[in-house]
Image (tube, rainbow over the protein chains, first blue to last red):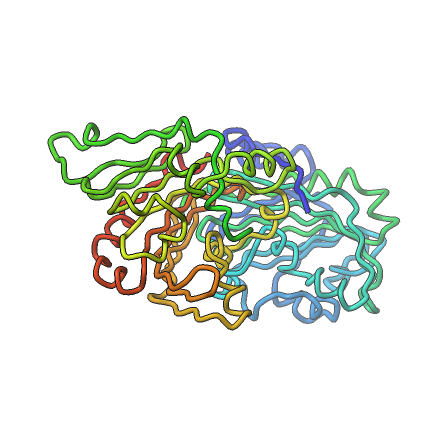
Amino acid sequence: MAFAGRVRATALVAFAPLLAVLLTACAGTQAVVSASQHLYVSLPSSWKVYDESQLAQTQPFQALGVSAAPPFLAGASASPRPSAADVFTQSSYPWAVVLAEPLTANQQSSISLLGLNDILVPVDQLSSEGIPVQTLEQPELLVNGAMRGTLESLEIGLPSPIGEIDYDQETWANSATNKVWLLMVGCSPRCFQAQHSAISHIVSSFYVPDRGNQ
Amino acid sequence: MGHGRGRIAAALVTFGVVLAGVLSGCTTSVTYVGSSTQDLYFKVPNTWEVFSQATLKENGWVDPAASGQAALAGQSHPVFETVAGANPKVARSVDTQSGPYPWAMAQVVALDGEDQANTSLAALADEDYPIDQLNQDGDRVQQLSPTRLLVDGALRGSRVAYQIESQETGAISFEQVAFLNSATDKVWLLDVGCSPACFQVHRAVLDRIVSSFVVTGQGR
């Protein structure tokens, strides 16, 4: 598999969070930020944001490969009657998952750029089990200094209660390969098509700074 | 990533430089070997010989034609290779890798899309010698020291040491340090080694050579 290359302009990216925060008030957005985990993403202010404990109680979330106590985990729903249970389902409204998680020693040694796609959803494994998986766009390779990552756009037909979902996922790993940062934004295929511009906008706001060896 | 790629020639090898003595100022105990265009160097004892590309090509250490073909086909291929040895006999054949004289071989390899997508830190150990395959084939593979993961800014890598014994290679002990850049489209690596008995005797010297391996430019 080949990636479409994209080297992010570090200087531009460095200004992005500041700019986004400044625009928050007038643009109707809210920032999901973790200073300690060094991540930032801008969501529409109408979205309801959920923390780890709220997400952990939902059934769809059990299907995701999240460790017991990740350093940072949040979900969000755009539904007018939002619920934490909307996240990672074929909802008619977009949802998001934001994660910062350490990698185990085994993952550190074995993970590849392709493997970054399997952090939250084991796409390769599901595909080999006969679950329909379709790549919606050519994966992109992302590079920002010592950080490397991928941007994937997938459609997966999972059993109930998740159902058929489309999502964009941007995943970053540090040079030490001991930590990953991830943003997944998706919904039902119909919703994804209708809302793709807004979803792309959210994904493009995802920012993890290059901190050298970090 | 294939075994033997290390023996394939580098088209850009003419840019390789040997900065003997000059960079070491008044010190003449080491020879600096490397390439400013490929952003790497390492030090070998000044008693060692750094072999010319013509010699390496003549004796099968490098194969510029195969490298060029791989590049044209969009496959992973070496863009730089240099070899030094403690004895001129090292250059005579790639079979001398299992011989009684220590050698050092540095490479820069451009990775194709598939290798870029699939290469992990663990896979770096297989870059020159197919450790995984040898293990699966039941050949004798012994790890000589624990794998060390390395991080230097945007470069990540590993340092490994193995003793392998197969019909194809004979018995070789070697140590390898390898780095990948963020984009995962380039590998810089240095292997040092010789026969297991030789490796044991010269371990300290070989260790210093590996420790001297530097990739400059942060893998850009």
